Image 1 (cartoon, rainbow, N blue to C red):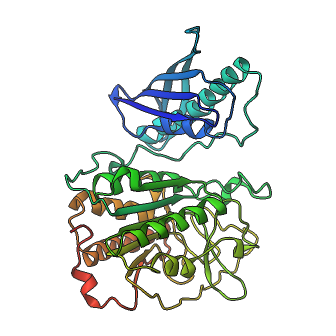
Image 2: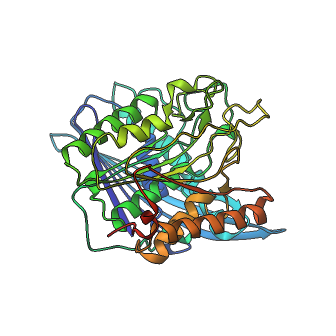
Image 3: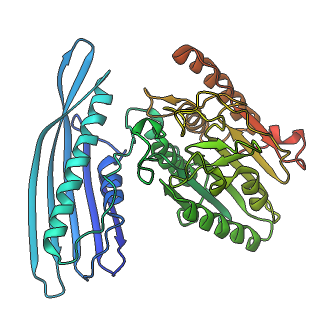
Length: 417
């Protein structure tokens, strides 16, 4: 299966990335290399009108097993072609052989091998581009290895509905790598699988929920200014839709309460846990998105606001959790939250997603989106509670909150109608 993505960099040149990614000889659509190489190069700016084409053929093979550990080997061929306006062409080829990854099953081992391949291939591509231009690529963090696991069934066979809603919009955020802008943190403070969560939800938004592709904004490892800019734009779109807008807001990442007011905040990757007021105040976000009339607003928050979450809290030294304040939600809004009170929102490593997000996606997959809000809430709540206890012996109870103008009729309302 071949995936192609084209984009224009700052000075106008075209970058085309084409990947053929297979797992044990079978076509795979999780696109680890396609997404990863795009993310790796997105901040590079060079002054040229050249066309740069990157083609990657990759496949994993089964390795050996050792005391319950499974190993996979990734082999990849990389072909880079650079052509200018005079039709002069430079071509570079490199093979990567038997990059090894391990896990508790072959799918996890294959994913690890792909992640190792992404790191090495990205470094190679950047060297080639660097060597070809006098303007070197901007300094940027190490490539994000994108915890985009293809081991979960919810990442494939995403149901497609034939109907789209021209006034439907989705703003989707996956904040995973908090070390990128905060040198004092270690990788344990990152939010495992947040990019995978957001990326897969964006595919469900388009294919299953009927949001036009051009109306979907997907942000990964987003800084404060990015999030605030997109929220302002979304608010304008709601206003100009004159009551017809159907809006989905999804967030996976860190949340944190203000230590003094206990107000919950969403935390961009450039905001520290000790300065949460530079983040996105959750109830300000709700008020902003319900300022103007709209058909409905559905919010999914896979974060907790207690100071812990996924791998560990944003401020690891704090061992005491804070119970966030809960304000009355106004407006035409339904909010699904991953956990309650001072609970932690957990990852689901075997599925490569957050625990809450996995069961959200699972229900959308099983029902093709033809599900009531109550049915969705009951399914998520039941399965998350049971799995959290079985897997971690820890309580996690998802919640649903609604705006004050919505009565109990929300329970029978369908997610797509």
